Amino acid sequence: MSYSNLNIEEIMSNIKTAVKASKEKLEINESQNYFNQINNDGHEVIELKQEIRNNNQKWDIPSEWIITSHRKGIGRFIVFGKKVIRKLLRWYINPSWDQQRDFNASVTRSINILSEILQDTFNKNSILSLRLDENKALIEKHSAELVSLNTKCDKSDMKLETIRNQIEAIDYFSELTFLNDRLRRIERNIRQIQNVDLGKYKLSETQLTKETSSAPELDYLLFEHRFRGDREKIKERQNVYLKIFKDKTPILDIGCGRGEFIEMMIENGIEATGIDINDDMVSYCRDRNLPVLMAEGIAYLDSIENNSLGGIFIAQVVEHLKSDQIIYLITLAHKKLKPQGALVIETINPQVLYTFANQFYLDLTHEKPVHPHTLEFIFQQVGFKNNRFEFMIPAKDMQIPNLIISEDLSSNIREFNSAVDRLNQILYGEQDYAIIGIK
Image 1 (cartoon, rainbow, N blue to C red):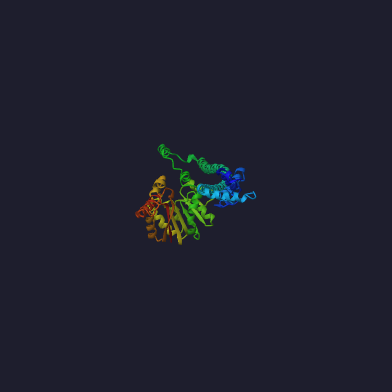
Image 2 (cartoon, rainbow, N blue to C red; image 1 turned 90 degrees about the horizontal axis):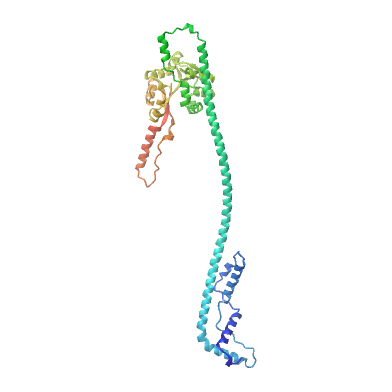
């Protein structure tokens, strides 16, 4: 090759050849190493990895390279000529060269940054994929648990329905048993009437009219069964009296009704006897083999010896009596009790207004309520000591809830809640009370 044949096109061609042949590299960023961790080894990803490596290897194109010639003799002149030409053209080529190199560097850096972002995206996708798999597994697990829970709920509903039916059957059986007892007593009364010699009795027309026109008596046994409640619940409620009468025998239950208290005493090994003026109640108790007599309370106490009883229990009776009867009953009880004997009188609590809507006026035979402090005063006057009260059966379901106090509310909330508590006590407090006195 001669100097005359040299031109710009040839020089540029040589430069391109030199660039392609160049093995020198300067990596701007090693971020492509992150990309090597990509789990996805598909064809496109492998190709992309290779291109990024090539970019990092070849972005820096040198503006000068070693000039050589394979021709002997004139080769050194060719080399010298090329160097001269290169120097002469440096002012023209180098600016474009530098711009190209800056562009290559910028593109390579951008690609490396994108590779980092892409790698990070792949990593996040991998994590999300794992979490998605975990969530799918959890969803499947919870779905299975939900199906199992639904199955259990269905079974529970079936069991609940069965239990409900059983409860209804028990209630029905209890009612039926009670009615059977009632029927037996009616049949017994009929037989007693049939055995009476009617010839011994002659009623005048006036007497007959008076007898037949009189109003029928209230079936008090059925009334108690309907409104007083289940016998077992009454016994459970009266359990509080066991500790009072534990070492005090014998016990007399005045107005024993269906015999819940007597039965509880006997079950706990305590000698007890009941009396009642209602023949149905007495028959009902005797049918249950309970020691119950047909007798009026004051008359019975009057007939027994003084200091002969360890304890006297009078539940839901004094509200049926007049004032003088109450005073005389308590006076007699004190006489008939042994020293250290206990008298317990349970009655409706008139300090709670709810009792008037719920209990007191429900029973037509109630005379008037007795205030606890009135009974306490009578106990003291008669001679009972260590008198105390036992309050029972609060109407909690009816009570007004207190406001919740927080720091941002005014201090009078406490005053309001205190007033609500007092109102709850008056309206929905303990519906029954018992006064206990020791001789």
